[in-house]
Length: 615
Image (tube, rainbow, N blue to C red):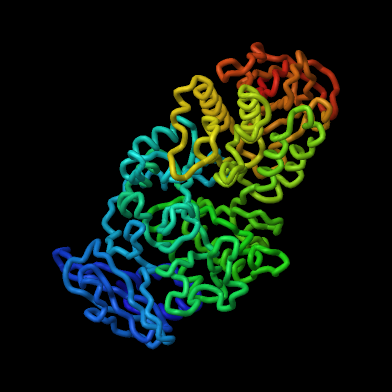
């Protein structure tokens, strides 16, 4: 453990200390032979009169181990001889208001499995990583395919109804992600939190690996193996608010240490949490250090920051005003993360229209490099919920997204939030009977996969799970025993492979030159067609949003030659009606809009088609 000096104090209080975990928490001490000889505990509690250590090794009698106040700034420390790795402990904090609080260590690396709330002494320095090739070879994401599998660890797979451990899911998870065609996995929060029902969004231990799923080294092993298999790892992170449970960091020393002092800005009534105050240097140093810790010790490739609207505006409400302190911290964090690795993924889940969220800080932006496109998600799902006969009245819900598609660098999310709380799964949002729901689902995914923007899909939606997500049970793997769902998953995998191996679908995701409409105003028949471009490739996508079959339909195309259908969602191998274009389509010289040539594909019912241009 590093000694506290003036430089550390200055950095801590002005909000620039990125390795606070090296100064606080519980740290195991070794002799020259690397044998454990003691553990040092150090905590910051400036409003405490006295701090004691309660642990299983002192029978939870704090009077036996009273910490020494080592600084007038409020740091307390004690070193206990012996090997105490995995010992349970808390701090017994006697406040200036004559309260006695029992707090978990904010900087603990591990925690007791709920319903217990104690911290655990844990060593995190000894893991031997083997993912060097991943870091040498991974590229910046902007002109690369990015297809993210969003995953809640506790309900992906169960072990006889219990949580599966990080290290016991490695082979199965890697094989599945490879088979499905995803490039990255994004875990819902995997730091420590007390209540399963929160899914991790109300955290108490931002440095502690989630005890439900194993030890820190178990998680390191999982991430190491994912990297060795060429799969990136993103973790979901709540930056703006904290759990109010008594053992957490909220009111840590009897005062709102890290959160807002005033109740109005502090109380997050919607989520029952306390909002953090980023005007405080110690709050900035805390979160800066937590995010740095997961990069340095767990080699994560990115963060998805939850509820950014709650950071941009006080209480997430534009009427409350802009929270400039939080925005300034996001800019500081952006500079820090990209200074460590300019290939990092720093993604905002932001429902506001606040400008330049994904623009560089030197360009007046906040500094994220990706933002979830909530407008696309809401508009598209609203459109697809409509009976096809009515879709002509909602045509602009598909076209409007292209008005702003290049104003930010977007990820198109069909996330956990859209398949829970009585919203239904993706396929169950679709109108019609069983087969029409599946056809609409395939059509929806074709639009999503070929639309400008990177992609994110929540687990279970890749095989058209009908039931909405229920976090207490695993996803509906039994659907793979049903032929129709085998065929839906085959479609998803084929679509994912078209996406990953055709640069036209990702090279210019953030540049208007990668997209052009061909058919945009056919409201009457609810047909859309557009081109996606790369430097060396043209794809034509045609979407028929109704059950009507068109034996021929004119689509303007930019160049003369052949257009080969490389995917059709209506094929019988996907459980469709098999109305597809078996032969290559040759262009006809005919002016249609701005295009000098047309092709005449057959459009099956509720079908999406992808054509590859060939000279």
